[in-house]
Length: 471
Image (cartoon, rainbow, N blue to C red; front, top):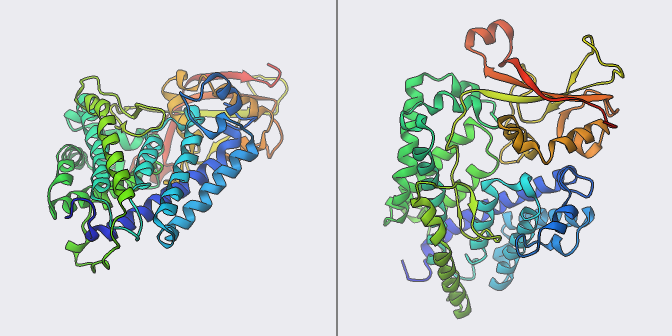
């Protein structure tokens, strides 16, 4: 491996860049299709109100300069088009500087979205996409050999994703240490998938083996990423396999797919008997200087994430600067034992009483109808469904946006209703809406055969009292 570029990683770079472009495509598509109801001018948490109280230096974004729904839509759909072209390999057909600018535009556009997205964009995979996307700017194209320094920076990102998640588990919930967390996790995770119930019903000894294997993959295997080949390739392959297992077990937006892309960047495909690449042109001096400067910047910015990893008070999914350049990651430090879901209902009855008929709003991803099979949405991200899961954990998560959500349901707002699976009133406004918290659990095999239901639910308590629009 040469100090700066290694042509042996040409296929690793190609696969990684195509995969990253695919993730960008999904992220921009998610933004384009959901923003009006969430952060639009008439959304639950409007961007104009946010930028009036948050200065540019705390949330740098193009939308700090000017915002309109039309401008946001233009930026999001531009991101979709540019990402799709990169998936097709367009960056390898243009000069190196143009390819770098192309990746930089995607990064700036998505940074602008995340930094005004508020709680709807407060997920770790947003920062992970921005950090990875920033490094992709300096990965080059076919006009130069893959820069070794950037390839190792990508491994450093992957190390923090895996090792940070492993440490937060060992320092967090006791069930990770006694290997029992997966007795509950598949049932209580934010958004189960079509196979989650089958995972939950696996024998408990197998769950303990899953948990032990998870600790090995997250706490031991990541060190292999920095070992000579073929050890690094084997470590990356193990991470890919475990991420695919997670893809089957639930919906985690693009977290798993972006982690897989990072792992593939560490694979030396030449050891897998893939053909060698043609000799690339020499590396331009200006490009080498840029890569060295970015490497120094990332090393310098890594101080706080490393200190966080070593701290007993480790924080997960934390950005240490508004540009999201070097972040801290982690997931599921605590695992819930009971699943609670907020069920939103409406009625067209003007006068309420014991005989009032309430009809449910059904969400696209989160459990509502006990008989419906959960669907696979990832890598697409259903932001409202995820926040509903957090709201069921604590009303504090819902305080900024749940009232505005109910207002928009009472007004039969079309953009809000598009986020849902069903509108029980067919586009007409209800007279009242309310919300209840109900306890859900997967049915057992006998119960499933007897009732046909995939979930059993019972009422726990009221979450929001009956409310009308003028109330």
